[in-house]
Length: 447
Image (cartoon, rainbow, N blue to C red; front, side, top):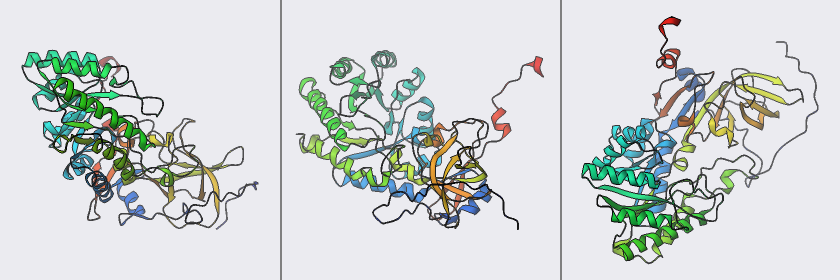
């Protein structure tokens, strides 16, 4: 067969950094996920397609629980719905014993629909609608107050219903990581948090049951959690001594990073990101050493999301075309874009070929198929030469991509879950035109 002609170009040889095991292994093909071939998944469910590993989800959850429960006697995880609220994913976490953490009314109702009891739902967020607060009060859910307007609204609603609302406040503070996340909750340093606490305790139909913080996302400093735990403990002890209102739990939120590599990072995430054990040690040792008696230790709640699901998700895609850019760089166009891989904006995702390729590699730009210049999956990656129709696998995409994706130019693909027995199940159908037009209304004069 006649070979395709490409004009000669001068290219810099690039082997990249060696890791602790020697030469790079990014070129090793990934031909299966949990025993199912990439080719068969693409043939059965289409390309692109998201694939989730139930085995890895459960392994991640059990490992995180073990990290905390071996250090602290009272621990409860609450699955962060905004991270990935596909019902199949949520139910796996709930089967493992996780509560639900939600930040909107529709997430609250999804949790109820997934069989979670009201008292095992934590309701966060700055925009809780009145009708949702009413349901949360009636279901004895844990309502985390974000601002004074919400506090006053809860006082009015609870008095009107003549029912007691179980509440906590979200606290923000300086943990040595900047910028400080102070747009959510009540500030610790300027006394705002204590003012909110006293207003709650003095309200006739509010019961202060906990204190909550969420200091940031993809946090790389374990010391910040030690500082946060210390300040929550100070507030909790003050509640007991000055207001005779001991709190039942401390909620340290989430923010633990996955092992994805952030754009601009000098070393890969697998070599630099702290483990869940590191965060558990910082948090639990702080609470245990603070001075609580054994019988008054608060329940420790964690709202982890990303660290529990990211590496359980894969995106399978296909090569659309190859081309040479004007500066001589090789470019490969894939059939998925940043509209469904939102995290490619801040991660350099690991991307693998799905079959054995030649030994020759070249620095390549990976573009998505969207008609917009910012649709870049990887600005630079060294890969074997790919041909039209070849499959690639994007790693660690389980967090946020399936909640922040958008339909733009191309429709959103199917999502598949591989169960513990290695069987695949479609847990979200691919979109079609009828689905996209379902919410449209055409005025009579345009018909």
